[in-house]
Length: 393
Ligand SMILES: Nc1nc2c(ncn2[C@@H]2O[C@H](COP(=O)(O)OP(=O)(O)O)[C@@H](O)[C@H]2O)c(=O)[nH]1
Ligand SMILES: [Mg+2]
Image (tube, rainbow, N blue to C red; front, side, top):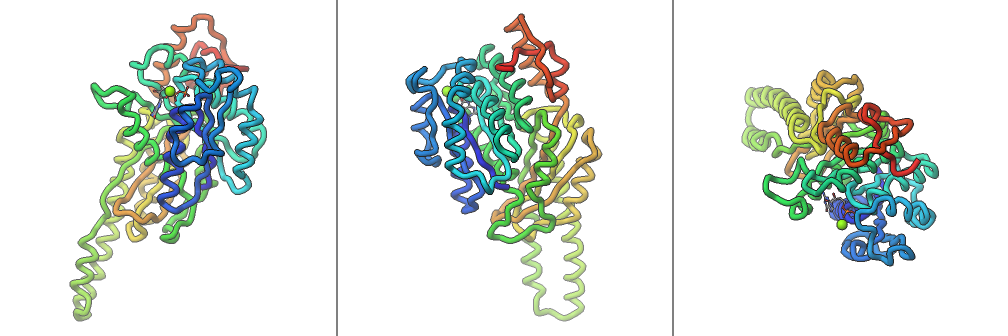
């Protein structure tokens, strides 16, 4: 799918920079991206986003030094200068875009405050869906970060068509600081979401057995709320298969028949392997650890060498996922990639429960006692809470 990324704040900018790098390396040209920030040095640190696509806002207010952890100021600056952000997006071109994805760390100031404001305006201006990819802070980053993230997330869920979550605390190792883990975490983020966002584009290696197009991704995400992603990889299914073919080639018919039998078996092998991979993806560590049985919809994606793709494997995996989630809508398919590995991504869309989100909202509630119940909350998780004060109405 053709994605227009907007990296908001430091974390958002770095991650979008990596998506663009991935796209350049793959020669796929599916991604377009800009970075928006109140801090000049953060923008200068980027490598792959073109200079003209790095937008500094709030210069008259903070003089290029950023807003610190003040997300209310981040939101205000964005609202005041929304025209220059939209202008930068338009200049970059949006006519062939399938979706917008805003990426931001929700615990800080610029991305936390700015991304819900931008989501609201993008939705107002464009017909394409507006998704957000929000990074939530680890508890060790402090209560202010959690408070910021809860307020931002509540608003972001209302303003975006869907919010993907990546939880820093679930991904950093024991004893490791979040800061020193950034690069590794970002690699994990870009690997997973890269498989998802590249789906539906015909690459150099041809078409898959079961093509997924952008509309299927969009339909999976239609319910809004919060979405988590599972991922697993394995080496190619059966290098020995090709070897055997080589050995048997040129032998008599009787032996050829035997080879046919082997191929049937190999087919079985292939589906079994794909099912196992999808199971691993869904039962393993998710971008946001959550109760997958509460997901409303799901999407199963298999990416890898064309001869590893298997229709039956995808179908069976879809049935298995369907048995395990709340809803009945499970979409899926595959697409070929030049790779020595097969990757499975499971999108668990519109999930109903995640302990870390509840915790965040709890911390925010304690931090701010004078709470307001915000209106029109899309996710039931937010409905149940005593309302965390929204960033803006
Ligand atoms: N995963 C990840 N998280 C980050 C990275 N940089 C910052 N963060 C987190 O994102 C949140 C916001 O920080 P930052 O992006 O610096 O704030 P902003 O520049 O004001 O938007 C904090 O919780 C940080 O821990 C990064 O490179 N990777
Ligand atoms: Mg920062």
